[in-house]
Amino acid sequence: MIYEGVLKKMRTEFKSPIQYYLMLGSDFIHMNQVLDKTIKISFIKYECLNCGLDKPIYRQGFCRTCFFEVPQAADWIMKPELSKAHLDQEERDLDYEKRMQLQPHIVYLANSSNVKVGVTRKSQVPTRWIDQGAHEAIEIVETPNRYLAGITEVALKEFVSDKTSWQKMLKNNLEDVDLVAWREKLKPHIPAEAQDYFIATNTETQLDFPVLQYPSKVKSLNLEKTPTFTGVLKGIKGQYLLFEDETVFNVRSNEGYYVGIDIN
Image 1: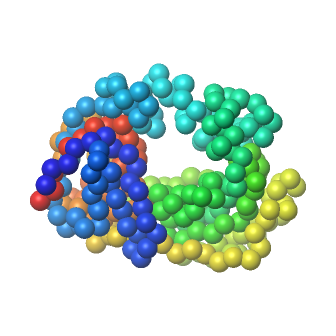
Image 2: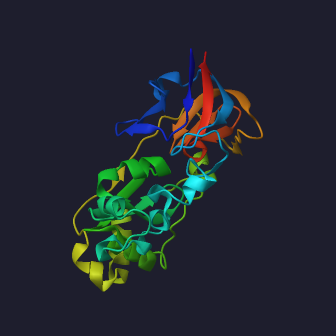
């Protein structure tokens, strides 16, 4: 069957294993159901997630113009410590920034390739962990706004990484660690403004991904260099599709690409 539409990050459902859904136009593909099937991906054109025009995608699914204009791509998205809505200060769109920033946020530890610290809106737990390919994670601080979570992350990344090695994550070269012990180890380094929001009693969340075969090496698919690709789907982890020939395709990093997908 052939599907066509603009790529957006796959929707997920927290089950064992994680359930993945690729939305394309008015259709969707339940990706778990096409494991071990042959998939052909064909790049057709660009479609900016904001303006909808056929213009090269710059970052995060947006063309260059939109990337530097829309509130969804402002600096505070990637650097929560730059949030200013709690001060009633606008960066691009104060109403949007208040809706996104002035809500509960979680500072968490996740183990995808190594232990890392991160920030997400409380409503995005455990979706954020799924998207990062973490096989275990734990909340350590819950703040009332994005700024406090951001400064906490900045303080803690002096002692623990804030990055994921996506190659190591996809090869599944992982070790289980005691995230509760890490939480206690990092507690003294939480900024004074956020100490009252420390979460003292919770347990790790375990995540199970639908993967039949992990790659020993990874070859990333670039649709601009390889506009047509055919392979047998062997797994899904994070926002990556894993193919039998060890090609991997990051759906999220290809948001804004309009594609055709043929499944046999």
